[in-house]
Image (tube, rainbow, N blue to C red):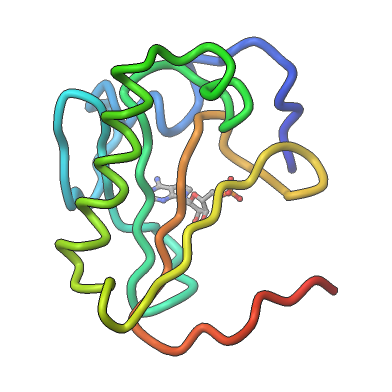
Length: 125
Ligand code: AMP
């Protein structure tokens, strides 16, 4: 079920539980600002999720309420993970779903990193 991104942050969402260590993840990277882990249902040979440590429902919430340091830290973490995965030279795709029309399912901001094969054009059907 897609989530309503205008609702208050729900600290029982699955990524909040991963951040608290209550649910395991396949960790790729962690620093002060972000945690990156492999998507449980990969849609490409490389499919990693990067989430901020702070409690933000979506990119909209984060861009409106996030502090400058945590926004910078998060953006740098996404770039760092993509480089560490070796995706810069072949190329990769970033995706952040926000709300109903995008079918966002987890109400904690996450950026998808896709790569590891030619991804083709972005299609809207
Ligand atoms: P979205 O549709 O953008 O909200 O994407 C949510 C993503 O989270 C999906 O690609 C799921 O496969 C992924 N996901 C859900 N639960 C987990 C989990 N426990 N560990 C890793 N990825 C997950």
